[in-house]
Image (tube, rainbow, N blue to C red; front, side, top):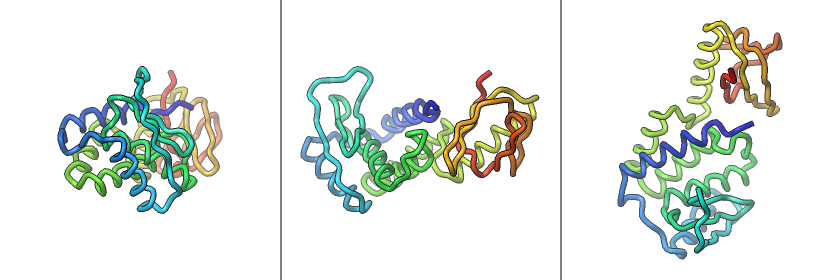
Length: 202
């Protein structure tokens, strides 16, 4: 299942970074490693290595691998590092579920921005997440998924992809009914509270 939030998150970040300007400082290699140590300590998770790559990688500012953040030229900014460290924290805490840019990840990321860059910067990022309909908490996600599902069902139903929680499950099929409590896809009934994402395929 594709990461439905990724493009929205990236667009929100670009807009927010333009708003906050100098409040999102550029980093030296030592700055990045010091922040990483502090974040992991504060979050009470195992450490993470920071690798600074001198060669650019097309389309990437940074990336996260198991217990490692790689920063490329152009990605030596605090918010970029915090973005990747939020992935690390979610993985170590056992919440690294699909999609990578989940509501849980977004909430962790926004909290990190508030803690390490201040409330004004966090407010700018939250504003841009809201503007682009990013699910940035489980509660926001639940309300928006329910709204989308009901709207789809009310428009006559359509072929959809749905991500469900507990246990994680991917369902594709014809949506015939949705309300506050249930989602009916291919005549199978699922509790709406388990729905993470829903998207129309056709």
